[in-house]
Length: 352
Image (cartoon, rainbow, N blue to C red; front, side):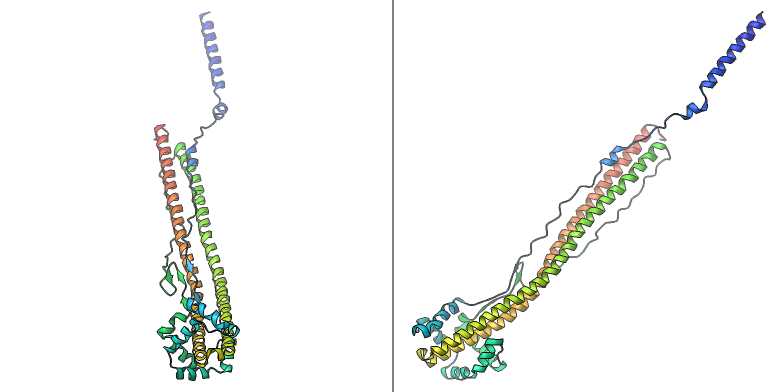
């Protein structure tokens, strides 16, 4: 009876053990969900945007050739002599001023060399025979005639006359190479997840930098294209401007020549000759000044474009530096997030 009871207890214990073993079978252990490590702070690191630097303004003053006030006052009165028959004091004073520079006899001899054919060539083409041009140049240097000679102003760029030195700017690298050193991590799940999050965030940061660098560089390329186009327009404009002034000067000489011829008897031979030489000298100087002005203005077209491009280059370099500095700072912040994540993994006891 006791043996039967003992066997019954052993049998019940065996059933209980079998029940426990069945409830702990392998498939239930495998069904447990693995723990996922997340590091959202990597996504908070952003590259700040920049406002493009406005290039410094390049101030250009164009070349000019203008008549003096003395010439401007005299000419209308000379043109009116055949109409009014009056020789005003300003006309007489101009004749006196010429006589201070050349004698009556020399003036008559020089005036006779300017035949109708020579005058016609001057009026139609601006051409003056070299020997006559030399004599007029000598006459124009006389102090008494300077008040009647045209005023030439050469172009300036930022206050400097064309021909002076325009500052150049050296280039810099568009993108700086930033070394990316991965932290040496243990092969536990937490640290591995942190590294993966870092490896995903860094390319996004680098891509944002590259996009900004391209935008900055594109602005400079646009400036280059704009300046190349502006040079052509500037040269065309200069040529047209001085051609128009030349036509006006030739027309003015033609009008004065006619007025002097028509009013010759009223003026008297001496005054007529002196005034004629004054206007021929003024015309020759005006022609010379126009040539000098157009040459300088054409040069200014190139130099002003170079100056604007140099200003754009300075702005470019400032913006490239901003982008690269911002990237360095953002990467440093990203490295800090990685370091903090690794420390947190260690403090949790995950492989530390």
